[in-house]
Length: 314
Image 1 (spheres, rainbow, N blue to C red):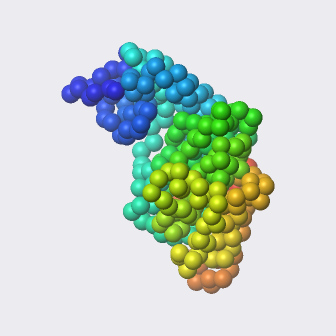
Image 2: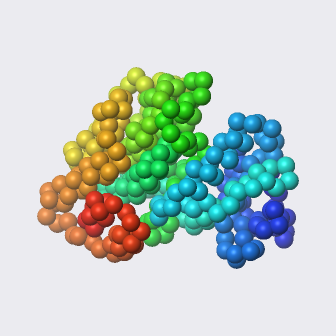
Image 3: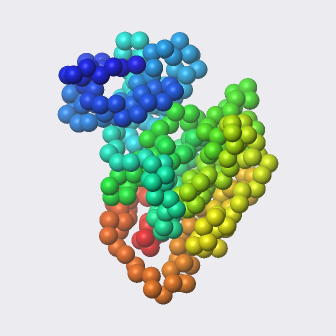
């Protein structure tokens, strides 16, 4: 693990460490200065103690390859990867802001329009991944940063895999228990529908301030994903409309075939729920602001027309 010195370590002769911004079980993330291109980056460094874990090193390498193949306004860009000393690193886009998890912890339940806005951005990222044959497998608010303008970016691809046939390895289960799809919990085949389930859990949490299932252990929570039906979000937050409640519950169907066909389908349902709410509330004010700016920017970057049209409603 990199230790910070007063002047900062220089990793691989290029990245001067400025501050640690996060630490996980497998890696630490630092804000660092790219001395060649003179910009800040997020530097993810694998803990040296894990360097002999071949599977973990392979997952670290795969993370860089998965994210590097994507160029999308809601996915943090990968700039570089390499080996340094006794470890491996990934240099990626540095996104200043707060994790979506911290926003939910501090502010949930979020107002419905804001929760929908953030979830649509997450689904735009998921749709881009799925379009390239990549399943993220660990979508959760801890893996998402929201900047001061409300723009969301997915920043972690630690267990993403390309293709659907090799997602499970000898029945292994990957993902975070509270956001795990039932098929992941059972060690079954994981597809884009699994990411949509996880996005549904994120939306549920944003709207209610809690995830659908709780337990003393990760295994207990995983079993609940498999066997139990969650309480409808409107039972926890009566302000939630029936249309939005129905969209969340469809995303949380146990059977992947009963969920939305793709990310666009989920986005469309959220847009319809948003419009239905506006029609029921004559006092609603159509606010323009930064989201309209985002819609124009997304148009320039080639976001699908349906998504652009929905963005204009927000």
